[in-house]
Length: 362
Image (cartoon, rainbow, N blue to C red):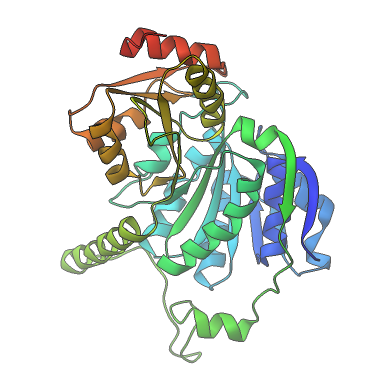
């Protein structure tokens, strides 16, 4: 398959991108608003074309443990779910991190807590960025704002996961998963052969040795001293990721007097608000974190010295604001504006929040 331009939903784009990446397996379970990922894979039947395994597991817990098993053999495997389903996967995600296994996880967020609503949300920020499972670990977290980024982040997520031997998550909100846009699909990559996997992933169970001497992949270590060494190694990996993989996009920051920080679909709404505010003579800029972890702390700290105030705009009660406040270390006022329960703000509400929370005169 050559590069192709299509009109499709974000969830559908994930499925197409996974096949074209040459992914070895997908294991998932239906839940709104991400069910189209599995449905599209079932329709495309990649097991007949690329050899990709697609399986609807009996539960979210089973799905993440199938990912664990596939990742242990060096295969490029993934899963997808939405907020309550990702909560069920947390133990397995922690096992993947502790076993230093690459895998790709998609979370198309819906409102909570609990079963909540099937409407969009960004309230899983804490769960993804702070590590929703137990232990000291991080996920690489990518936050798409377009259907094109949903497509592109499949390859990026897999590549980063294998580069650092750690799980990566695409943290999308329900708007990005459900909306339709033009997308450029990448050319088809060939799946790696077993011998290529063996050479590229010497750590995998099938990576080296003989039938009598196989690699053992496990997250268990009963010796406390060795477990501490494992954790120190994990932290060194996270340090390298934080030094090398921060991604963000800036808008109108050169002369900005006030700054908005927003991610995902909300950043698109904020951009319209900024354009309207600038038309009225107000110098507003925005930074959109693309990697929620590692977070663009240093750049936000720099911008914080330039502006009079910062507004975080999120579909939650205020989660990313904590990281923004840590970045500026009290040097700049930071306020939050958010909607919950599936209500999406409009640009005028963002402008009103600038007025009311940062005393911006329009």
